[in-house]
Length: 265
Image 1 (cartoon, helix red, strand yellow):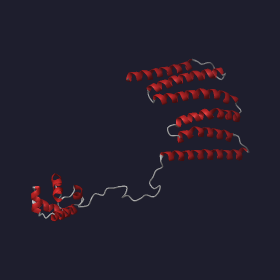
Image 2 (spheres, rainbow, N blue to C red; image 1 turned 45 degrees about the vertical axis):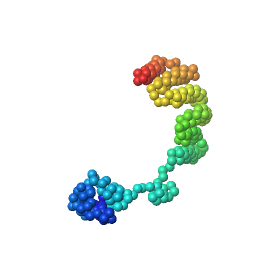
Image 3 (cartoon, rainbow, N blue to C red; image 1 turned 180 degrees about the vertical axis):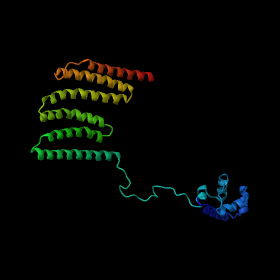
């Protein structure tokens, strides 16, 4: 605060009211020496008499403290107009689409680079085709997570539900290994059933101990189903004690989750 400016303003308002320093001092029950110190900028009015002083001089406290100037209040009308796009961050939706464009461009660039290198080094397309379909599969999974607001997980689950089996077929054909498709398809079906069930649990019940308990139960069921399917396909020996132990631990974990939730209630 500029004490000199405030003192000058008090003096001007006092004179406009036709008051002497002594008369103003009498109204405030102070000495005229105190008024003189205000007007010469040596001191400021005490806060206990500031409202009364403003009432006598017919000014506001804000005017007093600013020496007659109103406080400058920032307002949208007073602010200088900004140039289009200046100081503005992209909105969330815009950021999502930019990320999607960058993801797509990056994957396409990587695929094209691999195809060119494969052709230049081996005179044809071999390993680059595996990279291409794997990158496309990853793109199909990641794109819904980036673009869809609130439904990204469901979109990604739907995407892998549609594209996983064709991806395994293409991979099996490129590798010339039939078990990639046969075994992979069975594992995919079981895993997708598990993932959709987990999604439904969290969607319906939210993130809590009960939901975690249901996930443990589903995971125990998935473990039994995968071990049984692999045994029936002839790719693994019969389930052993370790498999049974893992299922038992998952069941115990589910029981703990349900009990803990009930104890909190």
